[in-house]
Length: 296
Ligand code: G1P
Image (cartoon, rainbow, N blue to C red):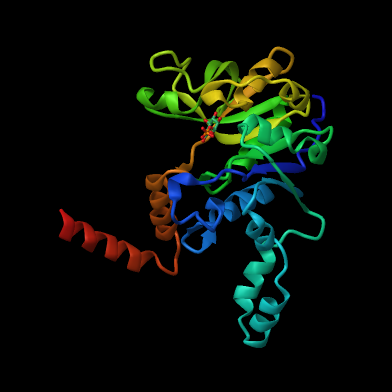
C-alpha cells in the first residue's frame, strides 16, 4: 500500500456575514456565537486538532478580527486567573490555544462563494493534501468526524468527503453525492456530485456535511471555476472536475451534526451539548421537562 501524505493543514472559511442571525451578528461574527460556553468555531478547531491538524488556516472577512483574538494568548487574563487560583479555567484555555505559528489568516475580499473562499487559501496550503471544515456544521461524536475521515484517507488515499443521509425532500439544500461500491464499513466510492440539485434530481440522499479532505490539485481547478448554483463559485463543481482524474470516497458519518447556520440547528446544538455536560445536565434536563410540560 502506498503511504499517503499526512493531512497537516485545515482550512476554515469564516468570511460569511451571518445575516440569518441578525441582530446577534451585527458586531459579532456568527462563528463566535456560543454553544453552551464555547464559540462555534472552537468546536470545529478542536475537532481538527483531535484529527492531527497542526496548522489552522482561517479565510476571514471584514469584522472578523475577534476570531484571531480568540485564538491568541490573552496575557492579562491568564495572569489574573493564575493569581486567583483558577487553574482549571487557565488549563482549559491553554489546552485550546494553538502554538505560535500554528494559525494563519487571509481574507476573502469578495463574497464569491465557498469555492472562491477555499481558493483564497491556496498559498497557505501549498502543495499538500488538506482538510476543509465548514464552521456552520458542528459535530458531536466520541471519535470526531475528521478523525474518522483521516483514518479512511490513510487506507484509500485520494479525496474523502463526509456525508450523511437526509430526507429526500431536503436534498436540494445541500451538495449531494452519488453512491458507488462500498470500500469499508463507513466508506464507499463516490460516482456523482451535484450542488443543490433541483427537487427530484438528486443522485442519492447522502448530503455533504461540511468536512472534506482534498488534494491540492483542487486549487488549479478553482482558479478558473465558473459560477454554479446560487451564482457562486462552488467547491462541489470543482470537486466534480477533479474526480475525472482522482478518486473520491465518501465517509458515512455516524454522529450528530448540527447546522449552526440555522436557528433551529443552533438551538438543538445548545440543548444537546448541555445535556452531555456533567456540570449542568441534570438541571438543564429538569428545566426542559418543566418547560415542555407547561407549554404542551
Ligand atoms: C455548503 C456546500 C454544500 C454542503 C453544505 C453543508 O453549502 O456547498 O455542498 O452540503 O455547505 O452545510 P452552503 O451551506 O454554503 O450553501
